[in-house]
Image: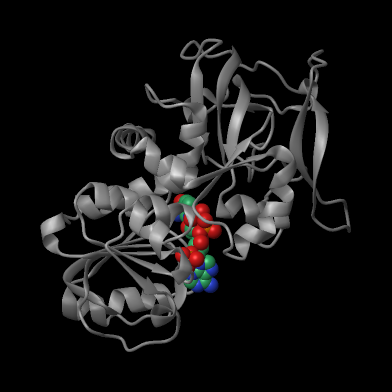
Length: 346
Ligand code: NDP
């Protein structure tokens, strides 16, 4: 996707603004190593953008943790403010579609990777990338969904567009205690699907059942090399894990089953065979949230507003402050964080 042209700017280097704000800041000096710290910046430090947003909440996604720790090359330009999601209020806009006071949110588009992101009290961005916060949804709720929840909805939409219904049979969600997995469970169960949650944390089974899982399985059964075709269990699956897990998910799909693949928590590889595709007519759909076109995003957010009960979200979310973000990144990558993390940046 080609980034839209910037037609006007509201702030950035060269402006006289002196307002200070705090942000997570990632640097990599010439010959030095990747470092993240909490820093005080001035509004004049912000890159140019059409819209200036006073951020109230951001989130911690898997990708943010990778960016902060430097464990994968998520940051493609230094210095960088991480945070692939934010929600807040428009402070200034050079685009007539947005006025000061508008409640907005943003997911992806390279934000927090190529463009300064949401783990900050202010962000500049392009008007084409902003979504209005759905009616009745607070900034905190929007971020308790965040990219993870919006991706979960994109996965559900992908399965449904391939004809999957609750009558098709049971569905599997991998990476169940993670952000994507936990919200996928809640969404699928709300739609009437029988959901099995695959997790490495069996002690969290009660939480997964509270989200709507009707069964919980130990992820070990899917983690190692398996046979190309195994017992036919699932009509549909949402996979946030990749690698052997996705290969085993494919091998255990029922005839005509459909899998939405969005993640790589176990690995980027896919050590699978074509057997499930050519002998059982299984479909594998890739799901990307970062450059998903605006109409699909809008549909996803409209549906999230209607289909995700607020109490389910609240029970799946931990609220932290900006100063807790950097220490939490390692824990998140170690799979120790349950559900979603919202960051109150103020
Ligand atoms: P989280 O860290 O919140 O969740 C990942 C979960 O995966 C963990 O909680 C854990 O669940 C499971 N897991 C972790 N390590 C392993 C392992 N070695 N083997 C098997 N399972 C493991 O991340 P998110 O939910 O935010 O993201 C999940 C994945 O989806 C990530 O890879 C992320 O990059 C990707 N993603 C992709 C998007 C896209 O646009 N395609 C958008 C958003 C996310 P449990 O303890 O229950 O086993």
